[in-house]
Length: 259
View 1 (cartoon, rainbow, N blue to C red):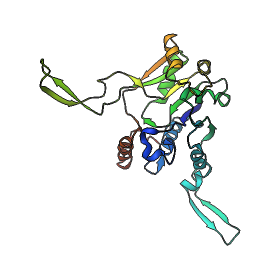
View 2 (view 1 turned 180 degrees about the vertical axis):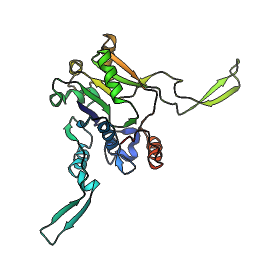
View 3 (view 1 turned 90 degrees about the vertical axis):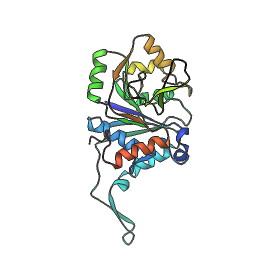
View 4 (view 1 turned 30 degrees about the horizontal axis):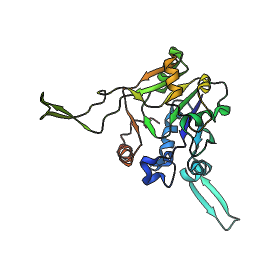
């Protein structure tokens, strides 16, 4: 089963980094968050990736073209006609298809434009800026049991703000606490499974947003399933998020590192 990763957005909310590179190429530790996502899927046996590139997509192509250089020791021997020797090749069981889906295309349009690389098969789909410890085997089993056109992973993110409880006159704060996970509603956390039927709901126009009319229509038609995930999930939307993820990684406590 192929894994489609949306990696073409502008990443405007983390512009400190994204003005130089696409958001999925921003590093956690010493590797792009895109690499972390692929390593996670690969752990569950999903090795065939289709990456929807857009904004500064050449950076993603160059990364994979030079993957051995990024991950291995290399000797450049200029005395022997510029010979290059790669030592202890770091091999991945990956097949990676990089597709230019346009700089300004929305999520639905990007998915529509990789249809020819998917064929008449179900596929995984996720965003190129989020990690978690989702049980992908159970997600796929849930999707098949429900029998919907698409199933998305629902999460309950922790609020970044403290919760204030007021007295009856709403003049005094009588309790202040951090908002716990589970206090809010369920939201789309990515890590989706989709049937080829989904392409019927997508338009090739740049303005087709997966999360609007396509998913809204599927939901109304009873064709959108849910897999509830109560474990770890974190997106990298801002520099604050990046520092949070990097702290987990550097401390050896990253919940998504299962390989």
